[in-house]
Image 1 (tube, rainbow, N blue to C red):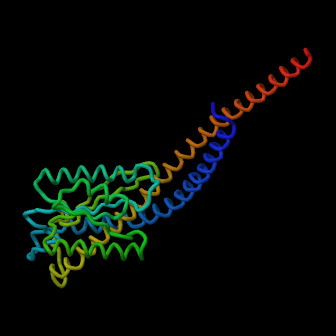
Image 2: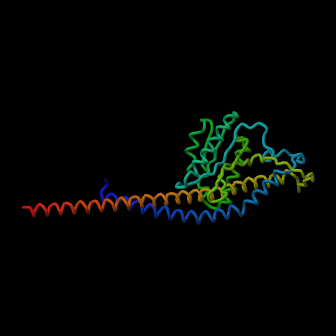
Image 3: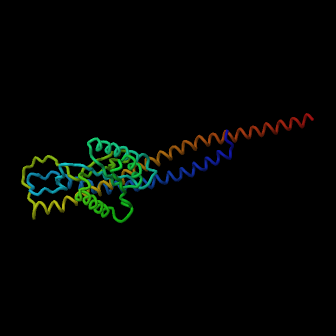
Length: 290
């Protein structure tokens, strides 16, 4: 049985840990609310922009814009994976790593190569272990922390488009966690190069001014940046949601441990007092007999 000093030390450590987890839960809750508001405010715009472009009747366009139409022979796929820079967020990074690892294996099964851009430093080392020697994984360093998120999204979009135009990659997809509520998160996979064509029953002709090539040169890269921005917002909300849930569970576990240790401590103290009383009475009886 542990002595009182050890039990009191354990109780003190757990109480200190509980203060930290409880504070982190409250902070994560505030950050989650802000992140959800930002994600919701731009979600409809990003969705509508993507749908408008994907529903353009492609037979009306003379110029074969590669960002829009894609390439016939896909040799290398790029995955832009959104994770977190910080830990203590439950299984957030584990789930995105598991999903991405499955995607990598699926791409390999089609005889293609893979390139990974990690937005969030917690994932890159895990994903490097899944890649072959000919494939690469790189970190989009400081994406969440440096400068404005919207500007960083445009810079990343330019970088990805540069990879595509140089022929280093032939297809690009975003992999991120979409936060539907504080307790419901789901991994989303969105193709951004090329944009998936959606059926359009409207037979109205699409008019491009000044021409289709110039319009697509502007709107397609802009849409890629917007989709990256939206994916980042969704991922941030998902991270804070997972952290809040994780810290809430940790706080509850700490409460249970404190309850058990307090009972054990009281029982130990009572046992020690009883032992001391027995020793005093025994000593007094021995002296009286003498």
